[in-house]
Amino acid sequence: MIIFIGGIHGVGKTYLGAPAAQSFGLRHATASQLIREERGLQSWGADKRVEGIDENQAALIAATRRVRSEGEKLLLDGHFVLRGTNGEINEIEPSVFQDLQIGAVLLLHADVDVVFERLQARGDTSWTESELRLLAEKEEAHARRVVGELGISFTYLSNPNSTEFGAALAKILGA
Image (cartoon, rainbow, N blue to C red; front, side):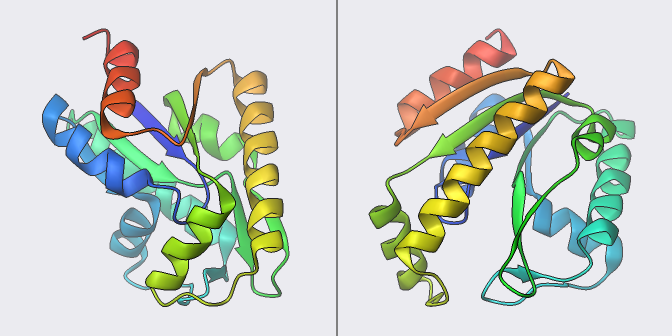
């Protein structure tokens, strides 16, 4: 089973997902990590502008097939939309999520001013708050569209703490 944690950069996907995965005996990985492992290279910079989106998604699908073939349950964090090389917002095709065989989606939301501060603290000064707000709106809208089209279980969490995240994950796992 693959549980997908969606949300914009800095929303807390890895911060909440990695320890929760360990608690539930799941493997945790970021989409970026699996893409790098599969392709042997990184096609995005510190500003999160992505080149080769289609090639990256193909690599992600191949990597998740490998994980599934090893019998692991995966808590995968990634995005429904990405920032392109020119700053444009690109939606990930629903077929990618179908090919990933996502069993459930946890979509995280955090207040834009909080995300902005987190990204600034990471040294990513390439965003304005209005750009982040638009990205978050597009992320949520596209996530809802994808899960609706594909009939994937969906949980939306706004500003969750680790206890709330863990409870949502436990519910998905039936634990």
